Amino acid sequence: MATTPRWEPRRLSAVKVELPEGVTPGGTRGRILLGGLQLFAELGFHGTSIRDLGSAAGINSATLYAHYPSKEHILAELVLLGHQAMHERLQQAVLDAPAGPAEQLRALVTAHVYVHTDFPLLALVANAELHALSPAQAAPSLALREQTQQLALGVVQRGIDAGVFQVPDAYLATAAVSAMGVRVASWFGPDQPYRREQIAQSYADFALRVVGATSPASTSPASTSPADKER
Amino acid sequence: MATTPRWEPRRLSAVKVELPEGVTPGGTRGRILLGGLQLFAELGFHGTSIRDLGSAAGINSATLYAHYPSKEHILAELVLLGHQAMHERLQQAVLDAPAGPAEQLRALVTAHVYVHTDFPLLALVANAELHALSPAQAAPSLALREQTQQLALGVVQRGIDAGVFQVPDAYLATAAVSAMGVRVASWFGPDQPYRREQIAQSYADFALRVVGATSPASTSPASTSPADKER
DNA sequence: GTCTATACACAGATAGAC
DNA sequence: GTCTATCTGTGTATAGAC
Image 1 (tube, rainbow over the protein chains, first blue to last red):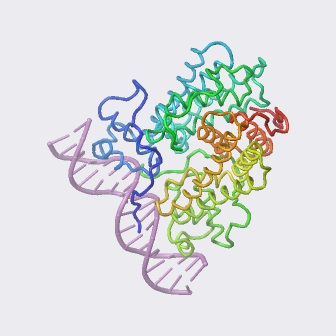
Image 2 (image 1 turned 90 degrees about the vertical axis):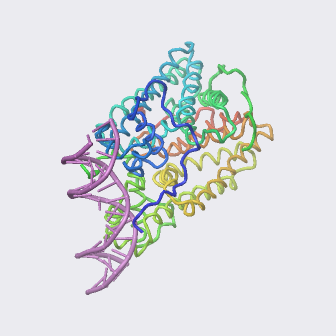
């Protein structure tokens, strides 16, 4: 058999297909982008054909080329949007937070979780399909990623330097905290019992515990319980 | 341009391409499996052609079909090997550990990190390419995955029930701890300054902090620093 | 901008000789 | 088991009419 039927199990729950406010282009270009978001998240870049993309956007595959010069350009735009949204929100979170390292880390992790709960498809595509881009197309996103990582690393390092975080290595702690949030995009959805606020608060508590925050800026040492338990 | 040249940036550091002891078949079949491990990790299942697989194994692409009935079967074997290795090692770690929840969680996280540092390619393929398998081919791996998750969840829950873990929700804590280890496969390699033992110990410390272990079974509250710092 | 039609490289897989 | 040669569908992308 030479064909590849589409029996692949869904990679994500039934999540709303949407992009951050104000960045979705209007008209056909917007529909192409949203279709690409869903398909790339579900089947991967190489698993998605331009005919798939055309169908999802309600147009013939040839019409795609009136809007994007290649399939790769569609992915590149999505990956960049994802990295921009991440960087903007984390940077704003730190800017809006009180001055202490604990408060800033809490703000950072909260925003990190929210990006992954609010735009799980975009986060997944930006992370998992970045490797399918050419170096030139990936470069802007990689630069943003580096900046975002430095932002988080800086918060942790300043907490250590100030003596309010008790953790031997800033990088390992940052990597661990970052990993927690990234993974949320893989399981968050309407078919599980946790609300976004609850996950964000719990994960912020976890992060402060990981870095060994002496007087955690937590609302309570235990947060809340899930809306309903079925796990 | 209708062709797709292979300029994709590498998804992983230059890691040794190997499978757990005793599971690599001999001869050509083994070379096919190892070649598939490298290629699927680097380019993804859909990004790898059967001609790529043949070249990597040093044979003609047609010869593949004397060993596997389809390209998908090669991936299926790799994904299953990955899930088996994970489940066996985590189960053994818990069995070998002292009885307390803190000691068991430490053993679990240590083993979890080691699987990801010792077989990062296999862990990546098992996690990231599982979705490319048909439901029938994915089923055994999904069953193992479920068992492994229950193993970890059980350790955390027993710690909570025994009153030695102080965390409001077992599932969120387990998901967070699991995420930390999974991500290690994406950055561990010879080009970074951390040794596997150091990561494992730090992450076990992090895990005990996340669950709020009262008297942590840690060797020290601070573990060690990296061999050399360049992060 | 959108379509139909099509070009042409490559995909997975098979036939049959050795 | 391994090869050469080949089948056939699908891939990305383009040409040209409307």
